[in-house]
Length: 75
Image (cartoon, rainbow, N blue to C red; front, side, top):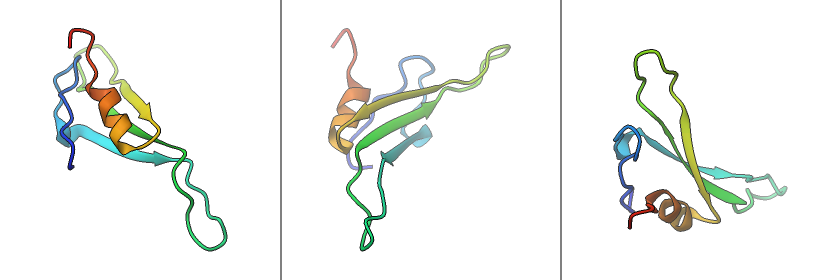
């Protein structure tokens, strides 16, 4: 990935556990449309007795999705 993602604030998961997904692309008859939004998704590491949960931050494009993920209250 070109932009650096901060670790998960809950489980400390690192960049290799993230997925960047383009949402809402549609076939226009000649090509795929631009994505409606982009998501940064991460599944926290399983803890004993607790299910894994997906964390997701969404932006209008890849850069804003990553900026949303990297935002922290104490920054």
